[in-house]
Length: 291
Image (tube, rainbow, N blue to C red; front, side):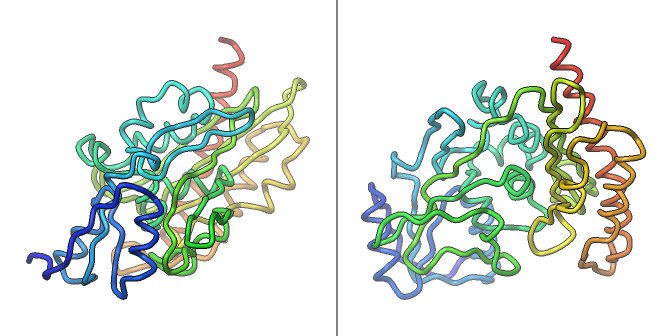
């Protein structure tokens, strides 16, 4: 099938795009188009007006601050994947991007498009959840900061208000002695994940856990953080028995299922992948500490 007729707009500034979104009744913004165009072709969404954000230069790029990276929402996934700054300062994003589709997909797909689409099987929302990313939305009234934990309002639905667009994403820099891992299970390489896990593990000088972050994706409408384990593990040594606790917490999270992958299967898989992710993150810490 092909998309139904629509009017095409290509603004050159954020202000122009916001004005279009605010004044057109049935408009959608398009970023990389990797998700929206197939949905339009299948008539799952039928906008009367399509607002192409590809001509807005101020939505593209990466700025390194003292404690965070600021990434324009229209920055492509491939550019971030190849960025030395991202690999050094926010390696969990680099690790997640290695699992996103094919290279051709990442050439067009954008970080903002993926986060706004919020597919449960997508990798970047899981990494953003683990990193406590902050999203900066822009509307007629100015900027609004949205913690990523508050960004999902349901399946494939985000907290942007009518007339708002995502302008940039703020990601904290990794602390010293931090290891990361991103693992997932899918039917075929480049498929959306059945379950995915993003993990970050920071150790203090004594080798104890200073901070841990674990997010599970694919199990529910939005990524789920293992908050109880993250709090309880602080000050503990990263030992197998402790990681087993995280695995059991993952096996108890709320899951949705289908005829192919029932909820019980996804919960068990979440437990397995959380253990693998923590083991890999610990190895990553030790590798960088020895470098």
